[in-house]
Length: 126
Image (cartoon, rainbow, N blue to C red):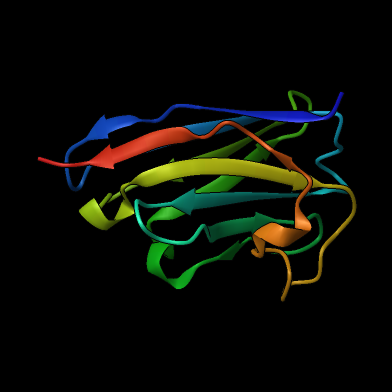
């Protein structure tokens, strides 16, 4: 059964760091598309970073230089290392997956993903 499960959220002070993990089953990290999204209260779900094989990760502008995505292919886990966190990063972070490789223009659009995790809360506050 295809599924993704997020973990690693929590409360952190501004400037702090967190690492999120997305455990993936039923997908192949070498060929399928995995994307981290986030949704803050009262806002639309936003694509944070799209991970596609043979392409560099595609980060949303607001996290460039602060967030780094990586994959552990044997363990089928995608990590999101978040540094220099800001209050505006507060959101529920979701991992989503779909078969195959999405084109760049589509890979951070929620409508193209069929499998979602339950989300993990990240709160940045002093």
